[in-house]
Each structure stands twice: as C-alpha cells, then as structure tokens.
Image 1: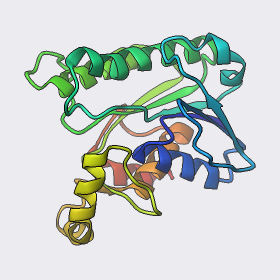
Image 2: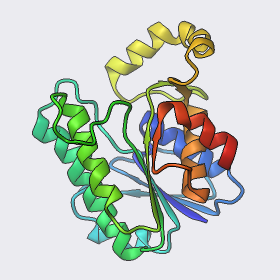
Image 3: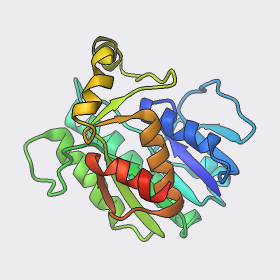
Length: 224
C-alpha cells in the first residue's frame, strides 16, 4: 500500500512516518511538509509545500494513494481561536477534500486529542475546534475515516515535540512517565504504540470510527 503522512515533523507525525517506513506492507510513503526535514529513506518521497489551503501544485504527488495519516496540528497555547481553527480545520479540510477527489477509495486517519468536543458547543476553544474538524472528516465519503484521541504521549526512539514548552515538559516528566504507565496505561501511550495503531487503522480499520485514548492498545491487539 501507499501512504501519505501530513505533519511528519511533529511528535506524532514522526511516529506515524517511522512505523510506516518500517512496515513491510507499505511500499511507499509520501510526506507532505512545510520545510525540509532532511530525512531520507528508500520508500520515502518528501514533498515540501507551503500553501496548505491549496494543494493544486502537488496533486501529482497525492494521486494513487491508499491511505492518509493526518498528524498536522498546532498547540493552542498563546494562539488566537481564528489562527487555531485555520490550522486545525481549514488546513485539514483542504487536504482531505483534495485527497478525496484524487483517491476516493482511500482511508483517512486523523489525530485529534482526548477531550475533543464533538458537539462543537463547549467552552474549551481547542476541544470545540478539534470536534469541528472531526465532524467534517467523519461526514466525508472516504472508504473509511478514523479519528484518534490520544491523551498523554510518551516519546521514544529519539522523537521530540516541535513545541519548545512541550519539549521542556517532557524532559521534566520523562523519568515518571514509564512508571506512570503501569498505573494509568489507558491514558499514556508511547509514540511507538500510537504510530503502529494509526497505521493499523489505515490498513485494516478499527472497531470504532472514534478511538479514545484507552482504546489505542485494543487497536494494536486486534488489528496490527
């Protein structure tokens, strides 16, 4: 199968890209990024693209694909609601609509977040907007759409967050995350587990269209 990954330079995107490149069933991976990552692999084609509201210029690179793992996002801290909605909803919708037109039989896997508000009416800005993005995708006629809502993510394999405040936080709590996973395994997912679960959903589907944090390991057990 051929997979496209959006946001492959972020923490979750790195894990999705890494696991896709490792998987023998994946023959090729297209990574759409805003700036060159420097990563090279025989199965990887990195496409640098600046305008995430218009993908016309790279449509040839987005054709003939079987699945999309969409990990592009931005931290809600210190950003206006309009700016957050632009990245979370508008960028996602533009990419999804282009992919749907070019590859109507593909599966689309979207990384959201624990606590996303599917009613779109709550008081928490990021949750409301994530819910709006989820609802728009779930209404699109792809072969399948799956939404993942991870909670705390433990970075492994040298993966780091692009957000400076998050990197600092992870350095502080890193010694405690492994121990905490024994007590709250349903809420703490490693990047390796999440990347494998996202790819499993893209390949085989899941039992639920919306996968909560506590269900991520179930996806691995049943479908990977």
